[in-house]
Image (cartoon, rainbow, N blue to C red; front, top):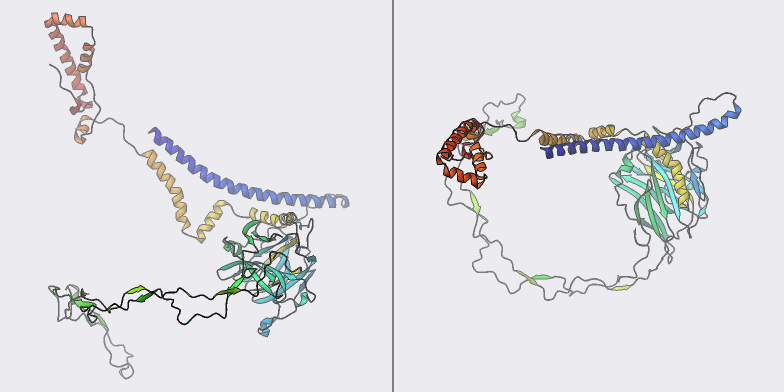
Length: 594
């Protein structure tokens, strides 16, 4: 019983600890995020108050500043937060796409600089794609061209699919530095060095990293696609939160793709892109042809085999069961279906157009109690003599030469580029998109060669935004209820999670053997075994055996007195045994000594 009580206490403590731990963890995270946002807001308010105090003799009203634009610190090539509220420095494309209808060829999709819908940081503005089912193109020049030499490339920006995304992209292009680059004529065919960012259509969730590699022999460019990330990207497109997309390219040809500062894909430009940067050294000879007598058949039919004489190809696969007997009560004369006697010809039935009317067929009610109706036929069974069409057995082909392949010859287009990181320099960043969804929010574009500088920019921009969004999230219980409303089967999980510990507690704490004494009658009815109970006669006997030998000799000298004492002891034990009979099992009583 003591062990059960300990188990009960342990189960109760464990259940309480699990519930409290989850609630406390969620509350601490929310409190931390709220504190970060409140601290940042308080600092900005203090700065504003210090600026306004010298000009006003009295205490000014508290300003409603809730956001401070990030400022680039350190070496960078491009930084844009859109907090000025204008498209200054950006150029809208005035071009048209080639080879499509005139109605949709124009890049007439609208862009706006505005705050996010349901923003948690008033004052934080970004670039918003406003139109759906239209072509959009906008670009801006870098402070100076980026050249791939000995420094890494870090590209990052933020995206929020405010209304979700059905089919469309949110990727950026780093436009190659060329003499004829004209941002006003930016189209899909404008040369670019790198394309990076999210793209989705249907249930295909992509995160592009494409770079254009120049063939050193021909001078032509070919697109190289990085492998698809192993992580599940669905939530980044559906949660309507702001996510930070980062691409890191290193001079040693390694690359990393991060979402919200977490690596989702990594690899090497030489081995983890398709098609491969370097072509194979050998290729199949296009002029080589398979000889006419080349035998690729590993098995052939045995030419020496012949059909056995007793092989009957005409035997049917099924035959009638000759041992079957018609069941008693079978109604041969009764049809299985009859015309419905209650059916009536429709009033609008035209026999000239519809033909002669016939009542619909229904199962014959007479056949419901009979084994069957209609002419009885023997059931069909498998024919034990059926063998089918005879075929020659297959044997190994003695002339088998294997699968023919063209011979290998040196690849005339072979080259080896061990430094694909050294791509074409780029001088502008652009967005050239088609989307079936509107209100895609872009913010905080940043290009640098210093990872620490890029992380500082991300912390000042996206980090504050993440903290504000986290502080506004509902509590743990609200999230659980919301999730259950979207997925009703979660209610079963919740009920089982709560009910299972309760049932275990009841089982361990409220069940067990009863310790109350049972009467002799109950013992006799159930025949339940009981512990042995010594009567006083046996105790007296044991006491007598322990007496000194001298006393025993005296008893031997006076047998008369010993008999009287023994008779007296027997009568006393007999009276007491009658009192104990109710608490002792008759089976356990021992025979008294005379």
